[in-house]
Image (cartoon, rainbow, N blue to C red; front, side):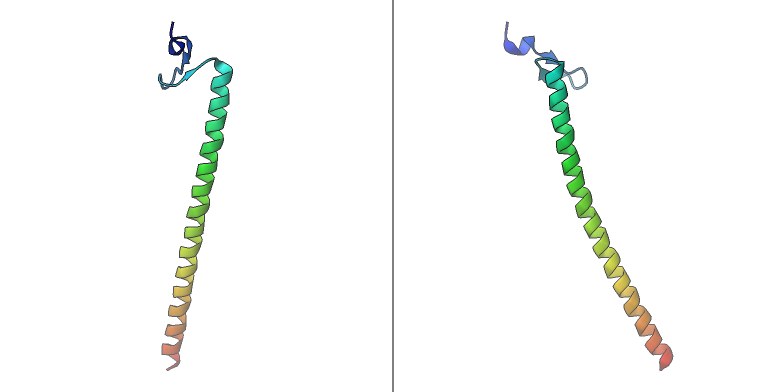
Length: 74
């Protein structure tokens, strides 16, 4: 009997194989940590982009406000 025939198959994807339920849990936990790290990094990047965009918009609004104040004063 081949080793792959003795391994348990994932009931969800039908592709992944594990020697037992404990190994499956270990791999799932490792994947969850990896996914969490990836998503955290992406969220931090998106947050930084959003902050920069808001700052640029605030600067532009302030500039427009100053320009309109000058127009009213003239």
